[in-house]
Image 1 (cartoon, rainbow, N blue to C red):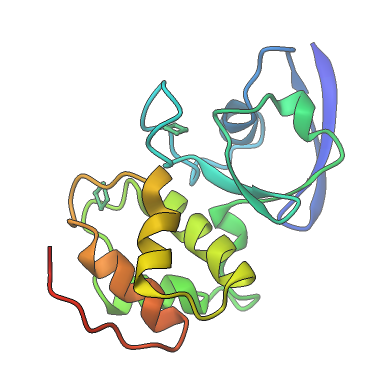
Image 2 (image 1 turned 30 degrees about the vertical axis):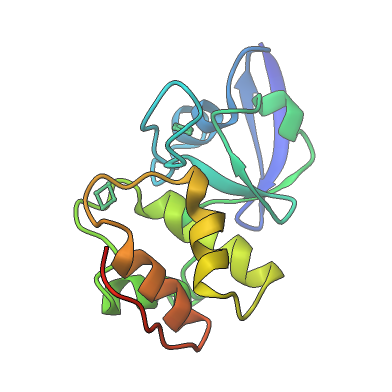
Length: 160
Ligand code: FES
Ligand code: FES
């Protein structure tokens, strides 16, 4: 075991990790940040997406040790300072971009990373960006709609 230190949601945190401990395990089990979900063991579902140094990363695909010293943001760090929902979270709520909610933390983190890089994405860019995030419930339409709304754009597409 080794002590790993990183900044998570603006706070410096340390916890013990083995060499094989995945970042998602470190966040959930080491730090108790269970908003980051695990939906597969093949790095396909995207439920575990967090930001590492500003980039969307599947936290099941890197080791905790690789994030030593990094700035990590999880879904717990997405709300506004007063605890209210951030614009992207509010857009998911307003546009029914979730049903069971299992994929939602990863979707929100992926969407936030997209909008940070591309503030006004096209619908095709949103769909392309979400290729690494699977949702079993929504058919994606309302998720795309929510992200377009969060970018200040209306979506004019037919439902899938
Ligand atoms: S749990 Fe990471 S991609 Fe599925
Ligand atoms: S809302 Fe259920 S998996 Fe996406």
